[in-house]
Length: 76
Image (cartoon, rainbow, N blue to C red; front, side, top):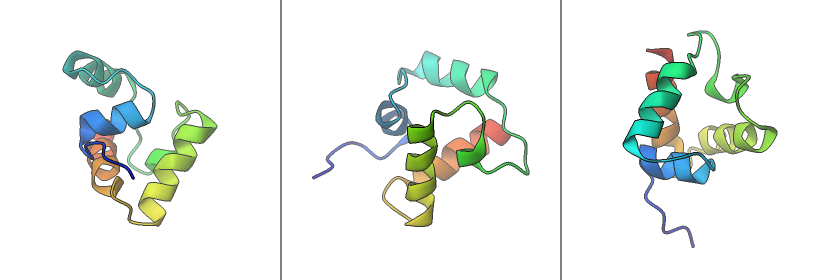
């Protein structure tokens, strides 16, 4: 059973990325996402990260809200 927190920090942990506030801000600042690009299609994800993001959105999984939030932050 997945008992992780399904927030932005939890998503970064799930993706295998540093998840402290400074690292999250730095990632967002250095990884812009064009408005017409779906988050899972961004070139900076590994294949497994992209698959996780796509699956989360396709299945409207527990992570979908955090993935949407990250997409908005990256394209903002």
